[in-house]
Length: 105
Length: 90
Image (cartoon, rainbow over all chains, first blue to last red; front, side):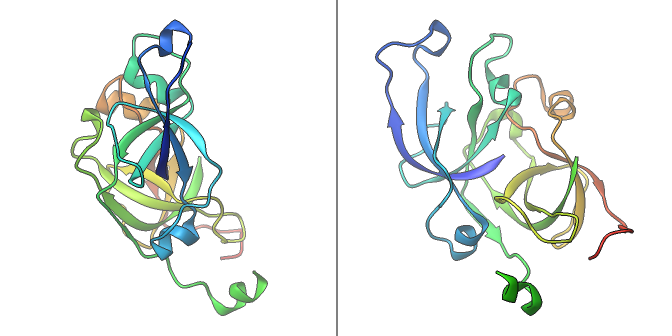
């Protein structure tokens, strides 16, 4: 799963039957730099199927790939990203970048 | 499978019911030269990995389906805690 910030929603006028009635979020993935700063996201946005109804600006974790369709099992749906949870608080403390590595960036 | 450094944890009240009680780690994939790569990942941990430690992560969701049911929307899990890595720069 990756972390993302909810930026918007999508309503489909027409869809394949498997997707009718599904809620779709626009999600911007969170990079490690922005997670450390506790502000912004910075990744390339994608569309995520959802049953949890997070608000805009909330942080979620979304699963990608085959497992994203698991909640619909045994139905087969063309979903490859799914909102698994809404994040209360991330406790994120990466080690400080060593000086030698910092110089390379 | 790949190696990841554990940089934190998250808590979540609203989540898919199959993830109830799951320990959720924030991991950072690390490359052969020890540098982090990519975005932070949320990894399910049933093994008690520690912050700062290096773990072996599987991207096969089948082990999670077995543990948490067929409908679980999760893919990454800790399948080992690394003791040591040889042959690469740390």
